[in-house]
Length: 167
Image 1 (tube, one colour):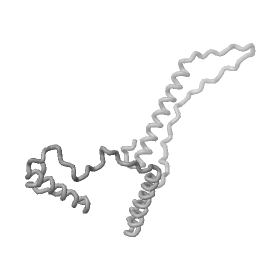
Image 2 (image 1 turned 30 degrees about the vertical axis):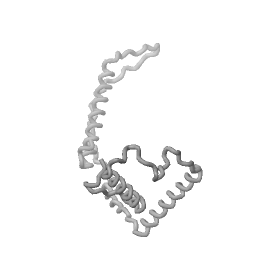
Image 3 (image 1 turned 45 degrees about the vertical axis):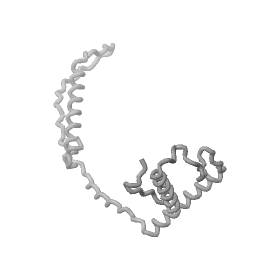
Image 4 (image 1 turned 180 degrees about the vertical axis):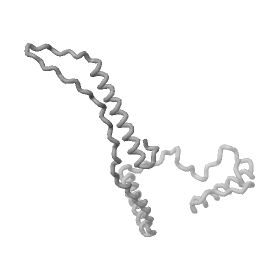
């Protein structure tokens, strides 16, 4: 029924469906009345014979088209509001402050535990048990240590040239 776009056509189709349904129901009712026995109980009093009446089928009046209101125009889609740079900045600051508060609460709840000895750095004067016989390997290790310390101090990632990579 929704495939028909014109509202007038929709109403006409609905009226045709209803009319045919009503016509079918009337026909079935007439058939049932004809099939029922016409048993009438006899009364002691005298009954007056009924005059025969010829019943004509009533003509079905042509349905009038129902008035309808035109469909309202759809509302325009709302335009999304773009936040101003100040609003964006305030929102970022607010979220950063909320995050800082949650971190502070978390840190305040959990006491700082000392680092286990297995994770503590080794002192610098321990001799490596791997073998310190290769002077070139010692140079590469020293270079990597110094570069790692510099990177930790500056907060950047280590950058090793292909000649100085450790394998």
